[in-house]
Image 1 (cartoon, one colour):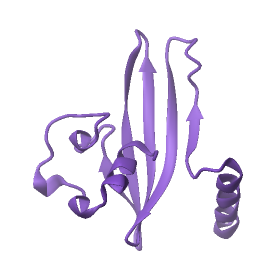
Image 2 (image 1 turned 90 degrees about the vertical axis):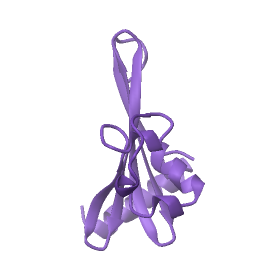
Image 3 (image 1 turned 45 degrees about the vertical axis):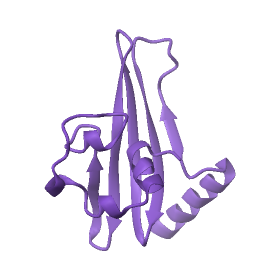
Amino acid sequence: MKSALRNDAIRACAAKAGSAIVEISTDDLNGPSGCEVHIGAVESAGRRWVVFFGFFRSPGARFHGGSVAVELTATGPAVYLDALGGKHGSLCPTTGGAPVAPADLPSGWQGLPQPVRDFLCKAAS
């Protein structure tokens, strides 16, 4: 699908659904495990991100999840925040982990408005 047509289709879907957040779930709570992914987008001060929040339920009712935020840059997409399995877990309340060293903070993290940081951590407002 051509890029312009794909963009129009995504905008039309978001408008019809009344949300720019998409949720895909395979978990009906009847099986031993399941997962869901929330996909959302956020923009701040000219920067744009697509956020993928994965939520997993393992056998024995163990839940885990976290987000991966990809920044859309002039040179292409780049992982901005990896709280799902990477070094940024402690920045997001749903994941936790060892404190992130100042040198390992995502670029400009401290200057982002709190609602944007929250969205980057959970792909939801």
